[in-house]
Amino acid sequence: MHRIVFLSRRGDVSGPLAQALFNRAIAECAPGTAVGAAAALQPASAIQAKTQVVLDELGVDTQPMGILEVSPPMLQHADRVIALDRDVELPVGLRERAVPERWDLPDHSAATIEQVRALATDIRALVGVLAREIASGAGS
Image 1 (cartoon, rainbow, N blue to C red):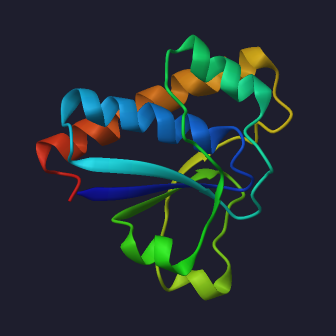
Image 2 (cartoon, helix red, strand yellow):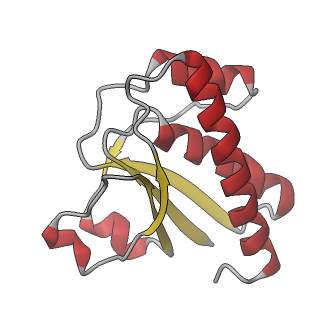
């Protein structure tokens, strides 16, 4: 089972979108082969309401979904760590545990609902590629 960590600064917009959309994509093309989890460097107290609206519009089940703080054990058990936000850097104590891939998405903490919808479209394309890569065996 591949474990993918989607790392963002606060975990209230891009992280939940990536987790939910990846888990749906992998369930459709290669069930049981991978699981995604969102993690944050400075976790927000909750997913932003506009993020929840977009996930609801997409028909993605978000229960249970919380915002996890990135930790050494999480990174140690991850097969891949994907830094979603442009400005995300792992703290020094965690850098030796994982070298994140970068998707370099812009900060959407103050985005409008339309911008979150556009972000979801971008993330859906990225996680679709990732899910197909894992399904084909290339994501090992």
